[in-house]
Structures are given as structure tokens and as C-alpha cells.
Amino acid sequence: MHEVQRPAAIFSRSHPFIDLSQRGGVATRIENDSFHARGVPLTAASAVPMRSGRHYAAFTILRHRVRVHFGLIRPGYDVENRGYSYDVDGHCFYSARDGLRYPGAKAPETCPDFVERRDYYGGHPWPGNPLPGQGWPGSQDARRGDAIGLLLDLDTGTLTVFKNGERLGVMATGLEEEYCWAVSLGDEGDSVRIEPASRFPLPVAPTAAQVAAAVAFEAEQEALWVARHFDLRYRRA
Image (cartoon, rainbow, N blue to C red):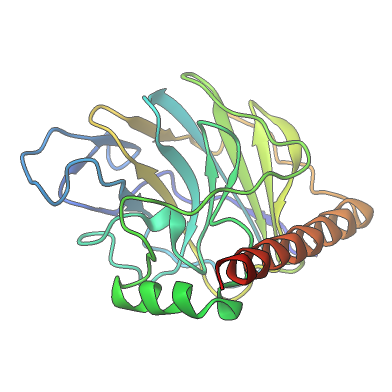
């Protein structure tokens, strides 16, 4: 088992309408007059990809209105020019508003209409209308002042969520390949700080039984998602 790696506490790349301050430790959504960016969740991220082992980062909410998300993006994602990173297939985010995971249940390959729209819009199927998030055992929302910790374990393919140092549960399974830490900010004034490694003790990883339970839960949710999708298509036919 790999030791837990904690990154340098910085955001190093972001959309032009996100200000990076305190040497990259704080990301803040700033006012803008761009019609295309107004109301679109934008992203700040680290530049160092995580390829293997276990990695931990904690994010404190300094201010948020509705749409603040913490999580993982692919290293090649264009944060400078694109929005809705939390709802892109292959990414994984925790929502402060409701504790849900984004994107929701994973079954786009079964939905030709989803794939067609996703490809047309460059990764997001319905701009301005994100897909529903997905609940997970132990999920909780977060408010101003709360610190959300994320433990990425690429040995087991899991992402575990902590709130103010206490483990909530395994939010996602089946994660593989490369990721970078990221935050998505949806409204003017939203602000988040990456915490230095010294603020929280090393996180306690989930047990094998807890990981297995999370895998089973995700499989059940995906099956329900597919069943609902085809039921709707059948009724519309």
C-alpha cells in the first residue's frame, strides 16, 4: 500500500474569471461581463497529475452561494476555456450544496441521445442543464467554513470524502488513469482555499468491506439509471 501523498497547496491554472491569490492557495470567482461565462460554473485546478498511489487534499469553503464543487478532472481538460467541469464524463466531483456526486450514474454508452449531445457540446450533454447528481452512503452537504477532504486511492480506484476531518464515506469507485485536483465555482464571489498539509492529520482509508459496499451500491444505482432510461424511451415510443 502506498503512503498518502499530499500536494503542494496551490491552484496553478484557472479560467480567466477565477482569481488565484495567496500564492495559488485561494480560488475566487470574480465579476465578469461576458455573456458566455455569466452563470457558467468555471474551474481552477492543479497542474500535477496523480497517476498511482494514494493522494489527499482538503478544501475549505470561504464563501459560496449555490454551485461549489470539489474533485477530480483529467489533466488535459481545458480549464481556461471551458465550463461545467463537474459534469464531464470521466471527472468526479463532490457538491457542497447537497453532498451529491457529479456526474451521476454512469451509463452514457447505453444512451445514443446522450452521446450525440455530449460529443457536440465538447463533453457536456446539455449546457446550462447539468445531469442529476448521485447520492452515496454517508453523503452530507457543506457550508461556509467547512473543510472537505478528498482521499483518492488509485490502488483501489476509490474517492473517499471527509468533512472537517471526519470520514463520511466512499463517494466513488472505479476511478483509474490520471487526475488533477480541481474546484468548480458557479457564482460571483464563490471562494475556496486548498489547505496546507499540516492542518489535518493523515486520513484513515476505508476498509475493504466499505469499498466493496460502495462498489455494490454504484452497480445498483447504474442498473436503476439504465432501467429508468429505457422505461422512459419505451413510454415515449
